[in-house]
Image (cartoon, rainbow, N blue to C red):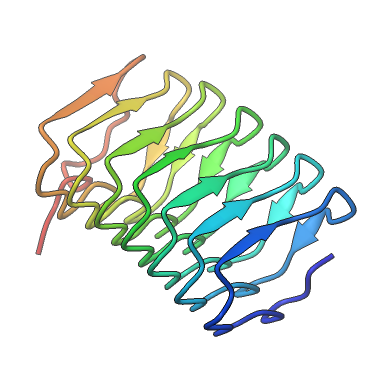
Length: 171
């Protein structure tokens, strides 16, 4: 396993490939690695910690392991260069602030197994133009798509959950 804060603020780290021997990555393990551009997470990893890659401002490419069950709070928050993400089929939840202020994020693909999209999960993703919500989503948190200034279409593969009108709220 990779413990919390192991590579925190490691400014010279530019790429990582998590080996098959790792099953868990702790909170903030790679946070604020400002030169980190490419990440490949092994299919053996089942858990990544809160804010694990937050503030990795150069991160453009991430391959998530096939066994991740949730995208935790703040996992990729403020990854301003991240352009696209495919959530693994095993994931059921995209937690609060998971992709908050990923200003270059233009594509986010969610599998049908996702049931929850947390508070501000995609808030501030200014390049996101459309998003398809899987049919099993029953909960979308406040501000989940707030300040997504380029968003012009949201497609629901099922019934849209009752959100009280606040998922698109912007300050």
